[in-house]
Image 1: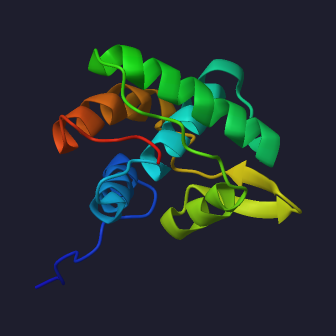
Image 2 (image 1 turned 180 degrees about the vertical axis):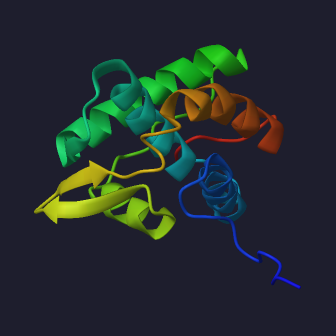
Length: 136
């Protein structure tokens, strides 16, 4: 009899979703990391860009916040100051890896499932907490 699989394969869409769930779990009242991920995934889905500087990560985050405000249907207090540590923190969730000073690369399987994740993340954020604050 074979062993049961206790962890999700790191190359699956389910793995990506479980990492987004983990981001939400640790978000408490603020949703920042899933929004950073969404911004990066949208940029990748639109342009194929895999390498991002901190400035580019900031821009994708800001665009994702604007889109989420529209999706949620209310003006959520954003005002979050973007910190360069956000990009580096994404390595905890296997989303990015550092490839230089304040420069990161988007990793598989996120690249493989970018479109599906871009469709799923906004609804999951809304489901997580209808009154969630994005930012500080």
